[in-house]
Image (cartoon, rainbow, N blue to C red; front, side, top):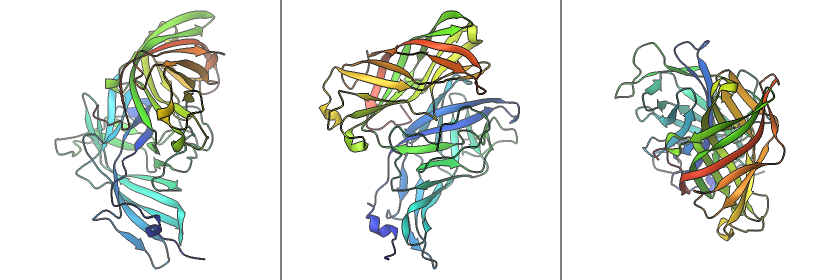
Length: 398
């Protein structure tokens, strides 16, 4: 049997610059055990430099294992962003330009390119409108990949299964999903040279459940959209209406990914994913300020068009847009998880979603705690898509 090495892939000497979906469970404050904990859905634009670019090596060791070098770079448009309920602010994570974010792709079995080990020594910068933080220790990022680039199958879970909750539990990540492996890690205020200041942290990355996880996606088009609307909830036998809103400039609102047939293996038609949602409102019946978000563990899949298109360019507008949304509601007293997806749909006039109205159709959903206690029901939703940025890339600096 012939022995493979990565030269057989014919990789081009240029960076990989894909979209990235990510999540991190963050604890705010200087007390890891008693701080406010939140799982934040993030997404953005990553650049990975790699062999055979200049300065990067390909090696086969004496035992027959092949590997090649990689590096995550720092640039103004590169990074991941999301909205923090606890901070009421945009949060973004960048590579620290002062420290090398280097790693490798390496064979697990000698002479066989895939599955392969993916490893990056991660040094990050965390920014909000009021904070700039760094961490002292390296965060090793590790996963198993089956291709380069290691794109995740559209609309598939980052786990082998579907966990519920934001606190400690055993998790099994899926192939082509990577995660931080030496957590928790404390983040400290930074000086202008990206050096940590003092010994009192401001934020921690927690060990679970979404432990600094990420996966690469390959959509045909990305929509970052400000959103407003209302939810209908049943709480303690009463029907209440909650006005909600989210601004894409704060990494809130919604992010929608569209996948043409060349990007998935489901045949004809264009798939859609409601990849990230953050809409905030006031609901006294649930304790005050609440946030609607899309589940990280359970993708909210859907479609645009009539299902016969052989490319995104073949979609005729106006066109139906559908999602089976996996919603969660963050409250001051804990998070609530919908027990089933809710169907939301509307008419998309063109690839600029501004002006599109989405409405919930079909069955409602119980909203339960992590221990399955029913606290409310989601009985309706009317959402309006407002100002948007649409393109093939979603840079962090927009």
